[in-house]
Length: 231
Image (cartoon, rainbow, N blue to C red; front, top):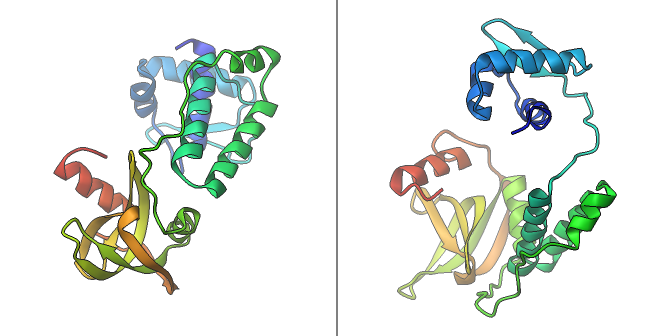
């Protein structure tokens, strides 16, 4: 990674963090020495970037600082375009419209050379007849996850047995062509994955939940990693 790219990446990294980040942590993230990070931070501060630091604590950036227009290289543009195509083909119309809107906003920030790169893209996501349909509203499910609303539904398992479930929805996960709704199941008192195409009578509860120890998305991810390392 060139120094200019690393400096920009360090700024983005610090903006994402909600706590101070040590030079050693940054050095590991960018595969350079702590001494290089010290010099990079000083260069950023000298250029007017509002980064503060304290020995033994780490660095933080003023979240009010606005970055200049984002610059992408050709591979990044192609990766973004591919992601937009996959969202369009494998989710629903509402989410596809949001993805295309985001892509249009990104396009508006591109330089003329980068606009040219868009015409050279050679990686695509095409519609597939392997897509498994579902009855639930994909966008509605996403909103329930975001709002932390309990949901209830009938679930038909692989043995064709139907059970009534109430869950804390935590995430939507694609195992193409299958989409899974991950959540904390109140019936089983454990994490469970539910195939969207096997869910019926989906109902949004009035009650919202708060993250509790052992029942959060972070706990779910840890449990999955412990089981098979797939997430």
